Length: 158
Image (cartoon, rainbow, N blue to C red; front, top):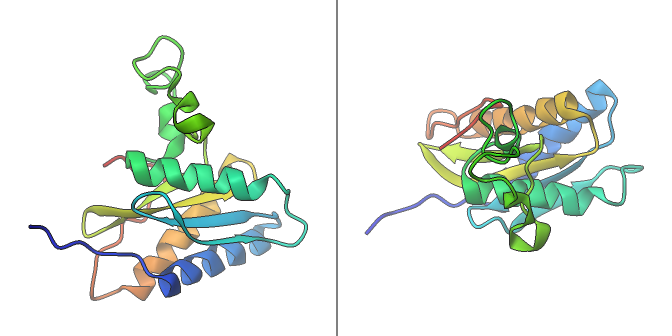
């Protein structure tokens, strides 16, 4: 039997606060979703004025990152992104009733080498979504410092 870590609401809220803090710093209106390991939301926040489509997109990105254990942009990164035309996973984005996101803005949350959730962002361009996502992961790393190891980077594939 395996013991596993579970992301809790306080940690999810801390991650969202960091992502939104970064969004304010760089001048972008973001929606941020933090999910558990199964891709179900623990917390979701849309900044005032952010697009109404943001919550579903952010959730889709977090769902994909948690469930498939990789940053969403890695699916379509040339030349070997598996979701690119002609590659082995082309069409995967139509899985799960279209909820599978294969573009930038979703990152798995990796603690002690295990994927325990996902963070998804919607509202900025790829660079902005990535900066906010990395800020969220950094906040979790700071919160868990000395207790657990958190992977803080944009390109994650577990």
